[in-house]
Image (cartoon, rainbow, N blue to C red; front, side, top):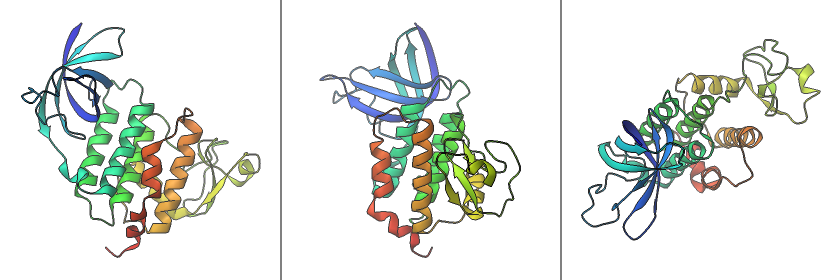
Length: 258
C-alpha cells in the first residue's frame, strides 16, 4: 500500500454502508480511481461537505496494488461548484462529462482528463444560459481527444488527403472523422457537415471558444458527438446522462439572443 496526495475532482459519490461512501475521482496523478471514504456518512465526519459532486481538492489516497477500490484517508476541499447543482442544464452537461470520463477513461498518468474536466466545469458554472450547451460540447470533444479519439478534420481520415477548410464534407464516424468524397463512397455510413461545423470542432479541440450555437446547430452537434462515441467507445450500456442532456427541453434556450 502506498500513500498518494493528489489534486482530485469528485465525479460520483454513492452510499456503501450505514457509515461510509464510495467516491469516484478524476485525479491529476492516478487517473480515475474509486476509493472508500470510511465514516463519510456520519454526522461529524471528517469529510464534512468536501465530497460534494464536482468539487475538487487534494485527495489523500491509500492505493492498494492490484485492487480496484482504494481508501480515501482525507480530502482537502479547494474549490466547490454549487452553480452546477442549481441549474438543470448546467448539471446535465456536467453529468455527461462525468459519465464519459467514468465509463471510458484509462489510466491517465499525465492528468489530461483532470485538466479538461476542471476547466470545462469551471466554464459551465460561469457560462451564460445561451452558452451552456456550447461549453459542454466543447468539453466533451476535448475529453474524447484526451482519451485518444480526436476526429480528423483538416484531412481525410481514410486517405489523409487535405480537405478544403470551408467546404461541406462527409463525416464518417467509423473512419474517424471527415473524409473526402472518394473515400465517402466506400464508407458504410456518413453524415455531411458544413465547413462552419468543422471549424467549430477544430476550435473546441484547440481550446478556443466559439460563439453560442443556435438550438438546431446544438442538436446537430450533440447527434454527431453521440454517433462518434457510439462508434468508438460505447460498450453496450446506455449513456443515461448523455441522453438526458441531449433531449432536455432547455435546448431551445440556445436559440435565444445573447
